[in-house]
Length: 323
Image (cartoon, rainbow, N blue to C red; front, top):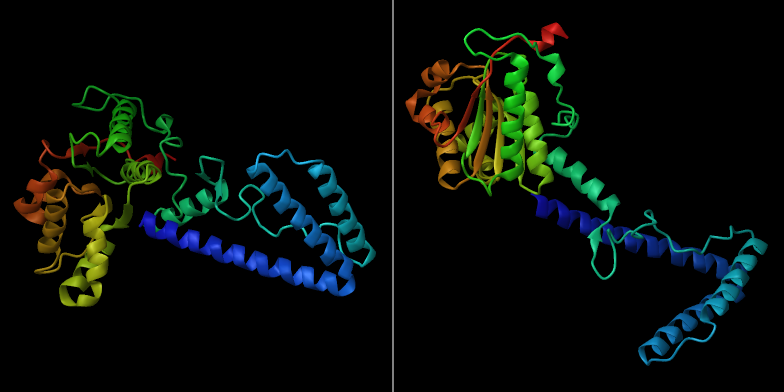
């Protein structure tokens, strides 16, 4: 996904440069019609640049080239204003002053310009399903909204529990696949405990690291698998679910339970991804017991094997009610 979007952006920047050139030469032609001297001066300036470059290549020191360039440029600008144009009318055309619409800056080491990086990030977020969820990050994750009273049977408060969960999941998101202690994460717990927020925060970390990431609801995932099951038209979307480096599934258990589709297709999805060392991060409102009952032991054995998955059971109060 990242490579395809980057190739598309590079192509668009090339088209932008061609459009910039078209605008520039139209402006030059318009200016020359009013003052042919402008064209002669621009050609003279270009010849001066070429001769300067040739001299540098041959080891000769250019003689007063900057001064001559400045003199010609000032004459061009004066002629432009005399003929009703702005002084910068024949300056190079571009949107970004840093890269001049090449998309890259720096010599000899080239780096992506901030303008291209910003657009690349925007498109990656949109394609991955994180387009409107940029505020859900580890930086904006607030521990103070969780109660600091000890939870019965746990020996720690909800706030302390969430601090540990935050640190564990952030560490995993920053290191996978270099560290393969787990091939995925399962968040289990009632509504309003922060599962979806952490899922999105993890997705952002891994997307920013350059991994191919997709975030979607379990309902949407089932629709993709159902379509592929009954028609070849959905095979490309299913392949995408299989091939993503990290697949984030939110609200597993809210999709309808379809005979011969839901359980079998989710099993194939999880099984194939684990076999090919692709990660899954899943949130569900179901308890671990209910998850086993709904999806059978075949799926539970893939998702709840604590030797392969980081299984996180979240407890406490619904923080949305408190807020």
